[in-house]
Length: 421
Image 1 (cartoon, rainbow, N blue to C red):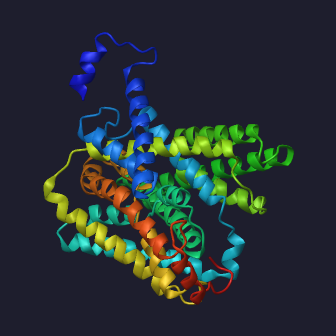
Image 2: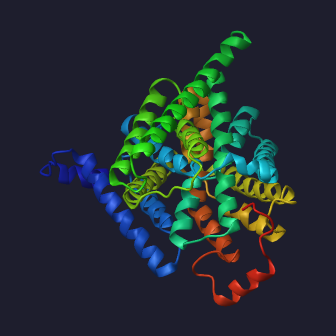
Image 3: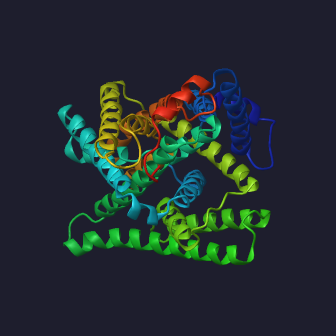
């Protein structure tokens, strides 16, 4: 691809630069691929986005150099922040007082996922620090992929809502632990206080930025209509500003956005829908995010020898998530069968995991390279297979628009128990 573009670059001189032209064409191809794939196969558009990015990366596309930095890193952080802010804005903490088993499901599912991945990799000879890092990264499901699957399949129901809730909470746990872990890596040596200081800085800055973001948006919603186009633009602009500020002062932009969404939901508990204008902007950022993740994962150095480790990570992660969600399902408001499909719907790994791998690469070049060697192929694999697995799980749970009437009638035999979803 670089050789082809070098020939064109001799006479083609776009005002914004050749990389802008490359990305524009790639995003156009990805949009068409996502649409055609959904239209002819019924798979979610995100699979087409990932395929387009993967083919571009394997063809030598130079727009996703690893490790991420500069504008590429900012755009990825912004896309993740928008998705996590929206996901956090759907979580009402008061709900957990009425249905605490959902919180236990998220904790046990994340814990078992991390433990299964850690011991599976240790059994295969991966050194402890690398296995520990990969275990923490594997805890995070992908609210971004799952939300796009839900939109594309028009899914709704207890499994859909539960999977989104647990995915958001797993991302919260993983982001907190990874920021703490990478903060310790930057302070090798010294006493306990020296090692804890960067951890406190990351968590403190993220919380402050998230709180300020929530407060500003709450003030805006007092004088502006939630469905106004100007409110949409203000919301995106404030999330972008929060992303830049959090990263500049040593915080975590995605964690700040997630905290901001959570706090805003508590300050403004009434249900609020995202306007159509914001949906378009969010969709564009999400498509860019998926394409960038696939390009980066495909262009990173690949080692065929780690194929077995990647397979072990994927299998251990899936087993840990499903078993953890299933074991804590008692009196949580869903049936045991629904708990299994909820765990399957949490299969995707994508942008949040890639950001955490990038954090390890920045904190420690040696550890980051080892982690990326296993994590990037797994992210690329589960960005595609995870979306397909989530689609299948929601379909088998009879919550998608493609469920037939016979399957819908069977759902009457498995009603949702209680208020939790």
